[in-house]
Each structure stands twice: as structure tokens, then as C-alpha cells.
Image 1 (cartoon, rainbow, N blue to C red):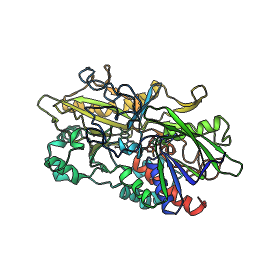
Image 2 (spheres, rainbow, N blue to C red):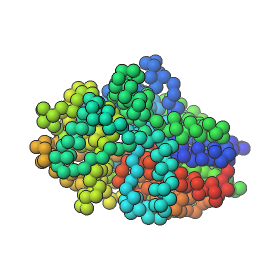
Image 3 (cartoon, rainbow, N blue to C red):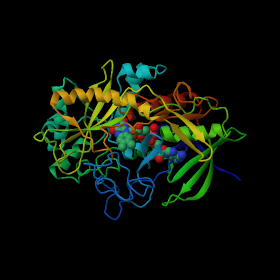
Image 4 (cartoon, rainbow, N blue to C red):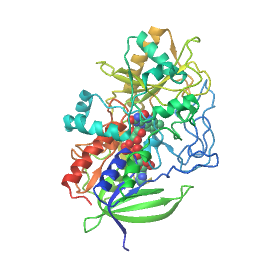
Length: 502
Ligand code: FDA
């Protein structure tokens, strides 16, 4: 049977994939993008493309019968999660033993669901994590390019200081200061002009209407509005949705052949396509890309792939926690969902922590402060291929999360003791103060310079590339999408110059 052919195929449509698609399209290479999620552009019967966090429906999650939000309970009450109809919704929670990984599903990948925090890592830590990458080129060229393309900007400080919508961040800043801790403004891709119009009542509210994690209807410059729109604009890029790549093999003529399952809205496989290409770019994210390559190696379709595939995974040391404030120290019923400030204690020699001050947009006063802390957890997980399930399984033990909790606890114990406050024990479905058994920042599995060369070229095969978060060895010290984007820009510049792609 003659397979469908495209000179280049990109699997996924998150950060790494979107950069690959744009730069291929600009270079005149006809490119097919395969995305397992939907295109999020059509309003449902309520007039909105996405549902809010407080009233989730089937659009919220990827084929679940009940939502699985990071905060499980409030005052130990099961008031957060709701029953839903299975549907190709925008947020997935992939459950492995001892670790759940949140990922975005749809055209734009994680950019659809994330908080938009656009953070460039410290140069010293970047060099520690990825010593084989030329830091001069990254900091002079690729980080600035990524930030510009993504539309990163900082909240106007006068508005931040005066608006009720960021009172929660100012309260946390004051408490950090009392403990002698430094806070920093964190750039974001959300349009702050739009947010100010939301506050003024002249634009439909999104960040100010409890929208994030299940998508933002307005204001956020997700990839479908930036890189992917530009990629389609080249006229050389096509995006095919509800198409999940499963197998990769190599034909005798050197082309790659992908087996791609077509899904319907119930999740059923309604057809299978065979698509061949000369050059293959994997941007399916840390879980997706690692699974595709591990399956190819273990089932023998790409046997020369590196034994390093599947290794070097980490959740960026993610820990979530809440603190209870004094009754007089209100954080406000009105909270913007878009974080703009962090506690930066990364230079702490024993327990480096970068903690974003997260909203708890309940619509009522909660007397709580919420944080997503990034810590320097040295533990790494490994994926193995489970033949019976035909899936990659992450091996991560509960004790591997302990260093994340220890680091976060050292910072927030300090903050609590300086302010006479305590933790919240009612948020994670039991009585834990710290949740380190889920992450927003899956990194690694196909680590740069080990499973690939220094530019994401897979070891063992030519014209096979990895462009996403699986390249970063488990930790980057800040929210990762700017780094993923910048590394992908660096890869594409090199590959298009040297490899005769397409
Ligand atoms: P990404 O995960 O973005 O994209 C992979 C895509 O491939 C997905 O669309 C997926 O559906 C698709 N796919 C997977 N397997 C496939 C297959 N076999 N076939 C076809 N398609 C397939 N980061 C940050 O820097 N700032 C922030 O504020 C936040 N906040 C945040 C909040 C939440 C709730 C989450 C879940 C995540 C964040 N992040 C974040 C993390 C950030 O979103 C994440 O690091 C990037 O999206 C990862 O980019 P990648 O290119 O690696 O893949």
C-alpha cells in the first residue's frame, strides 16, 4: 500500500513542535503536524471555547469521568472536582505510581492550559544543567528570540500595586519580606493591557474570571496565536488533529513511516493512517516523545536508538502547598489566575527554591496563600516499556519526592515562623501540607547530549529529531517553556543550516 508522504512530519503541537513547524514552513519545507488533541477554536453552546476552573464540564479534561484538579479538597470538602462526560478535553492528568503528570492536549499543547509564566533560567544554573550548550548563543540569541516570539512581558507595576486582583500576591510578597526573602516580578505571555480592560469592565473577563488550567478564552498568547499561527501563515504547514502517532519505523529507502491512530470524540480509534516522511521531528512532550522512542526501540522498529532513551526524568522539583493567613490579612475574593510574582531563593546554597505565588481564585475570601515551588531535586526517574500495555511507565518512588518537600519546607517554615502563620492541611484530599506527587513541569526522558547529540538529533538515526521538554534532564530551576522554546530555536537553526531537511 502506498503511504501518504510529507517531506517533514512534526509530532505534537506544544512549544518544541510549534518552533519546528514554523521554522520548517519558513524554509519552504512542506510539513505535516500531527496532534492527538482537538483544535480549540469553536465556541460551545455557552458561547465559550473553554470552561472555567470553578464550573468544569467535559471540555476540561482528556477522557475522564470526573475532573482531577491539583487541589482535591477545600476544608477537606469534596467541592472542587465534578463529574464530567468523557471527551477530548484540554487538560490531562497522566497517572503513574507515586507521580501524576499534568499535560495540555490540543493544538498548542501545554500553552493552552498553563499559567503563561515566561521565565528565563539563571545562566549559572542553565550551564550546570546543560553544559554542552553554548550559553553565549542562548543568552544573546535564542532566549531573547523565544521571549519575543512568545510575547513575554511584565505586569505594569503601578497597576499591580493598586489592583484588588493582585492583593494575594502583595500579601505573599510582604510576608516573604518579613522573613528576609526576595520576591521578583515574573514575566508572562498574558496580555496585561487586556487584563486591565477586564478589571475596568470593558473586556470579557478571562484571567479575572477564574480561567486557567482548563484554558483561557481571552488574553493569553497561547501557541495557536503565536508560533502556530505564523507556521500556518507560511502556507507550508498543515495541522491534523485527533491524530495520535503510535509507531515509528524506517523504510528501506530511509524514510520514516508513522502509524497514526485517528480518534473520535469518544476516544475510539476510528481509523489508522500510515504516513511517511523524510525528516521526523518529535515534539510530543516529555511523556509523549519518550514513549514513542522507547516503544520504537523496545519493539525493534528503531533498534539502534540509544539506551539512554527513557532515562533522566524529573518533575522540576515541583511541590504545591498552601499557607493559612491571619484572619485580618485577607488575600481577596477577586484573584487574577495569572501569576506574576515569585519568591526567589534559588541562590540558597542548601535548599534552592523558586516559588511562584499562585492564585486561589475561589470567588470568596479563603485566607489562604497558595504556591507552586520549584526545587532542586537530584532524584531522576526512568521510563520502562510495558509490552502488555504497549505504554511507557514512569518508575518513581515516593521517597524520590522527599528532597522537593524538604527544600520547600525549609523556605516556608521560615516564612511561617517570621509571620506567625501555619500551613493549610485541607487542600490535597488528606492532611498533607505539601503535595509533591504531581507535577506541571515534566522534563527529560530523551536527554540532550545523551539520547541525542547536542542539537536534539537522535543517536543512531539521521533526520530524526527531538525538540521538546524531554531534552532537559529533569530540572531547570524555573518554569520551563521559555527554555524549551529557546532550545528548539537553536536546534532548528542548526538543523536547517546543516542537515538538508525536507
Ligand atoms: P507539550 O506538552 O506542550 O506538547 C506536547 C503535545 O504533543 C501535546 O499537545 C500533546 O497532546 C501532543 N502529543 C503527545 N503525544 C502525542 C502523540 N503520540 N501523537 C500526537 N500528539 C501527541 N510552564 C511555564 O514555563 N510556565 C507556566 O506558567 C507553566 N504553567 C503550567 C501550568 C499547568 C497546569 C501545566 C500542565 C503546565 C505548566 N507549565 C508551565 C509547563 C509547560 O506547559 C510545559 O513545560 C510545556 O508545555 C512543555 O512543552 P513541550 O513542547 O515539551 O510539550
